[in-house]
Structures are given as structure tokens and as C-alpha cells.
Length: 90
Figure 1 (cartoon, rainbow, N blue to C red):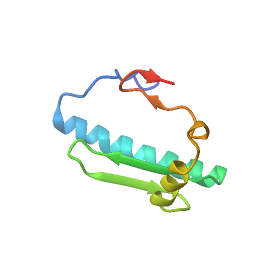
Figure 2: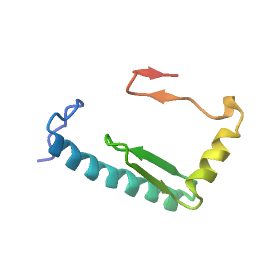
Figure 3: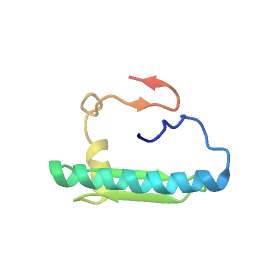
């Protein structure tokens, strides 16, 4: 028996939301580290909490270096932009 599926909606209880954010943030950082290490790629992860606290992760290079490399690419090479929150996918 596996875990029950979590409904994709805002968690109303502030304490439960904070706990879920902390656990998922750690999971995202772990996955970013794994893909960076296993695939030998540059990864930059930037997360802002609901209180505005900044959390970052970068594998081999600084987050700033990875972002600069991305911004310096021609727009057509930056790849598709995905905005799940706004239900916009291009």
C-alpha cells in the first residue's frame, strides 16, 4: 500500500503548510544535487518561502554563474517557459 495522492491545492493550516514546504524543499534540493552529480550538469535552484526567505542550491558553479549563462543565451535557445501556476505552457 503506497502513499495517498495529495490534492494540489493550498494547505490552509499555516503550520502544516510550513512543514510541507520544508520537507518538499529538502526533496527538491536532494533531486537537484542528484541530477547535478549523476549527469554532470549545471543546476541552479532558487526558492522563496511564503515569508520571503530565499533558499538556493547550485551544483558545481555558483547560482549567479548559472543564471548569467542562461540569460546570455539567445531567447530561442533558452527553451520553453513553463508557468504551472498560471496554467501557461509554451
